[in-house]
Length: 270
Image (tube, rainbow, N blue to C red; front, side):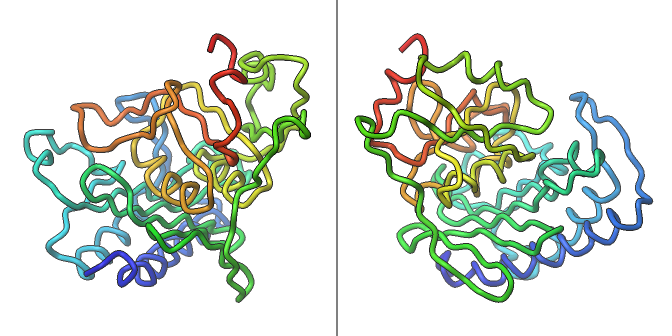
């Protein structure tokens, strides 16, 4: 089946998982443990993960699934996968625990090391961002669907940037990466995928991630931002690739809405 034939069911699966996360969040009754990589996981992560695994296995039993909560698959086994599902059942577990509501369900379809379809569902608002390669990026909210595009900037006429940052992040840790006196307006949001979607829909111009993330954090966001007219790139300004290394850890990356800007000159040290 083609990605466009799978996207509606992927959205439905993400919605079911998101509804379960929302139930657990509102009840305030969840278990929390720390994984071996020192990141938290909750009973909401695990419940959502099971819903997604069951749904995707029923939808496409022939397509393997790689999830953050079931990632113990060696490269020797997955290197030959031409296509697979890439899942983060709860992106923003820290936000979930803190009670901010800025968390999402992520499902991406990857073919030949590149995302070709992505879904980001926000349980606390019911908003869903999605994209299919070659068919654009969209936002569903309140029973309506609109095509989204990133903000294209003329560097000569627009001296300021809207920068997406985390709630608990020191803005200076990001601002110091940019040449001054370029003015940066801060747009605060939790969760890597949600900040990327802010760029995709033009509410932010840039999101710089310095620190650990996994491939499941960026797969859906990458195809959404690309279809919206932007790019998700490493610090060498190259698109991220998937399922090519023993580790799932991403390099530091930048999400930009306007690829025509000279980002190699905007970023310090380039």
